[in-house]
Image 1: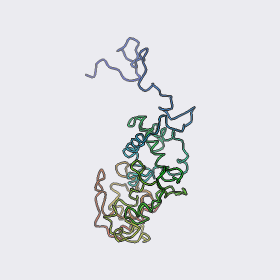
Image 2: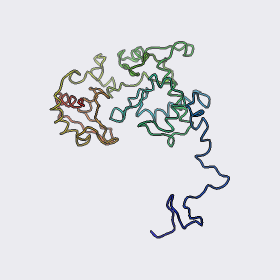
Image 3: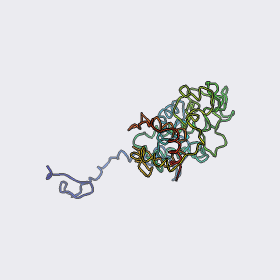
Image 4: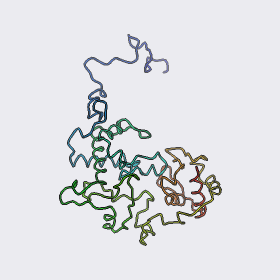
Length: 319
């Protein structure tokens, strides 16, 4: 079976008379990847620069499709509200960019299409997974998501109101600061949101990145504590012993996350800087209860006392 007529890419072969394994393109044909590869619809570029605007009309159906595709492909890193704090980022993947930074609010629409097409930094390209039509729909939805957090009364349809997120939270029966501030730290307007309509980005429904418990299941929230899950366990300002925490880490965490805390992404996330990324409350919750729905699941550590976890957090804060 080994000694048979065959060809290897980019090698010579005796299978064809011209001695080449790579066959020339047949006359009068166009490769699937060659058709329209230079126009705006396929590249998002105009004269070598990222263009602005959709190559087709932005209808409600386009935005709904963009929201659906965004929720499927983008939320694991960027979250449903676009703040860059998606679930896999919370679990140690590279921090994702917030769409609500000044830089991306000013970015042309072609920039988002180009990044989805070609990748950017740690973000892979999605050209194979998402057709160009859907990439443009996602870009349109990202723009709508940005506008939903900086809209003025003059920019919304007649009869709609611009309400602070705190008001929307109270209308839903939650504490007024339940959602907190999830915008970019440099942004001046991180709270206003368009009055919720079915087709509008529903930023006011996102659970804060500090924890994954729902308000109905969080005792601290049920008692009216506006800090939500951060109230669980010892006070956030508790000072731990980093030396003792290092021993606890070596005994409980290093097998998966490595002695260096670098992990083995994407299976075991890095814990370097994890306290700053996800918050102390989230670290406490995960250290005690694990992450049962992770792949592979992280086991709980019920044997760790509050002091043990405080010491562990002190170690994780070290550089």
